[in-house]
Structures are given as structure tokens and as C-alpha cells.
Image (cartoon, rainbow, N blue to C red):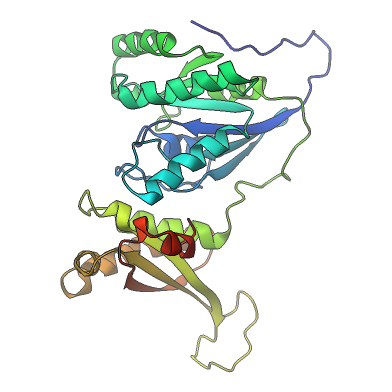
Length: 324
């Protein structure tokens, strides 16, 4: 089984600082977003039991004394059925051409399947065609199976693709997450820091808020609905707590209002999100508000509107308007 190709540093010699970009790839729902959050130490990518939750290459930044790892949590590679699906797959392929290390995530609780082999073939082609990134196979969800199953899976992964290292981890329990960081850091090029200390992501507050609202909306809905949900933050405004629209308000001293639109593709889906008497929408708002409060470090008022953008996943104009 391959080991890390990190070069050793002679005793007493100063170690070189390393920094670079790492793409986490894999089919949908293999734990990429959970791993991103575990590595960064803060929630920078939304998670859900629904496949294809991630729609953007979200960057989380892990800074250590000896290295800085810039994580790119890509959408899950899948057989596309819509224009949105095609664009998500294109995003993954474009991302892979720009990174230093690829972390290929394969869950220990599932056997290697056609989707994994499809991705492995793409990665193997990258290695044949040019000098590409280093590859690390990350065996995720090891907390869900026993040691015998993990051992069998490691053998299967070793036979699937020529990689520079294989690391079994559990992002939920933290098992060997630090080992994975060390392996990845050792494969990065020598470089100064790419981002200042304390930077955890390059995602804007608006983008993170939109994702938190979408995460709340994904929970408890039918399997076909999650892919039809998109969220756009229309405004974040500091308002007068007494309701005077003309009053000047100092930053941090007023009532912070977040206005967002939640788009679906059909009127029937709008009814599902709203729920009987608005009950479902209130649940979505309460869940999202709690996460946004934590993100911004203050209480906010969340104004959610549900809108229909007919078949937006297949409409190039509407995809552009929604940020895809």
C-alpha cells in the first residue's frame, strides 16, 4: 500500500513552509463537506443526507505553522440529467486542473461502484496526460464499520488507482484527521502562506448565509425536491430598531435584517416548502436563523420569500441569474 511521498528533513535543518490547493472529489454524499468542516475546524460547507448538496467549489483554509492547506470541496461527480448537473461536473473538472493535491473520497461503508470507477478513470487520465496533482485516497466514514471491513476496503482502494497515499479517517469522530492533514501538507509545494492568519474561507457572508438557508430547507423534503432549491440573499441591512426608515444607524447598533429568496421550479414545490399554514417555512427560518446568528455573531431578523423559477435547472438564463 503506498505511503506519503513527503521528503524527510535532516535533523536540525529548518523545515520549509508548504502551501497549496487541495480538491476533495468523489461521488455525491461520500462525506466531502463533513471532512472539509472537520479539517478547517468550523462550518464552511453545508452538509446534508441528500446527495449533490454542494454546488460550488467552496474553499476552506487550514493554517498551521509549517503549512497552509486550501481545501476545495467540489460538488459530487454524477451522471448529469440537467444543465445544472453538467455545469457542476464541468466545475469539478476545471477545479482539478488548478490544484496541487486531489483527495479522492471513498466511504468505507459502501463498496466501490461505477461512480467511483468513473472518477478513478478521469484521475488516471490526468496522471497519464501531463504532470498533474498528487493523489491521496481518503477512506471516509470509518466510524460506521469494523476494522475488518476497513482493511478489505483499503485493499480495494489500493487496486482502484495509483495514489501517493491512502488514509482511513472519520470526520465525525476525528479519527486520523490530523494524520490526513500531515500527509496532504507533505505533498504540497514549498510556498509562503497564500492567505492571512485567521482566514477560514474566501466565501462571502452572503454566499454562506444563502447556503445555510438552503441547508435548512433541504431537511425533511422529498428526494426529488432538493435539486430544485436555490437561494439568493437579496439584502443584508442594518435598520433602526424602532422602525424609523429614515434614521441613521451605526454598524452593530441596529436591527440586522437578512432578506432572501428561496427559488423552486414549480408551484407544487412552493407549497411543500411553505407547509400547512406556513409551518414548514417557519421551521426552515428558525433553523437557518440559529446558524446565521452564530455565523455573524449577533441576532438577525430573517425575511424569507418563496419564488417559482420554472425549470431553472435547465434554463441557461435562469442558471446565470441564480449564480450558476
